[in-house]
Length: 304
Image (cartoon, rainbow, N blue to C red; front, side, top):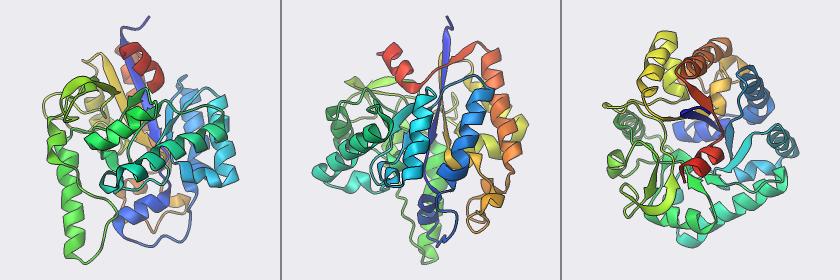
């Protein structure tokens, strides 16, 4: 058995959520993640002999093609996890009853679509509060994987949201409580406040490097290029667990009908072939360092 473990999770945020972040209109390619990226994700996983965890938005299951595509992924052995009902970036600002509806209804919808009840949850925009995590725990979830204690990401997000306000544009995204930057970087049981270890729900934080806590997610790896991505992969390979988070958009590029979004989402200018080359090298590097790949639900069971 491998002493080191890695999990790849992929958030299936559709492209209209990115348009909402940037405060722009995006009339075309509304379903590019399910219509184009999903098959590429399957090919990527098959090429690397791994099964991933897919965080799906419940409302997307209203479209039959989305539901059938997600069911096919579940039947292929991938884990389907809960990414809320409507992917509202302001989920943490809603009342407990609406938070409960967003979490529990999504679980029911995803179970109906795939035949499997989700065991994990990831909040839109990585934003959680003590109350939201209480709701997630009460829903019967085995784990949460939302906490992203990354100063570079926090600063970049705050800068973009602030700049948009100055320009008179409104972003759907909101900035997290800065105390999230104090949270552990390794898996832990949540305390009160959630940034402290305790005896609550198991948290599997989004991956950052030791020390500077640089982001090790799809966007950062792709924009870093081959050399930069390998350097990040080697930095995290000293630990016992790597939680590598990607997005469906990491398997798309501007030529998939997304040229209108690309000026605001510069990773879309990187061709898909180059993106896949980077991600394949990262997986290969981790395997060479002794990591075995598993789904997040397996990680949670093992760590619990």
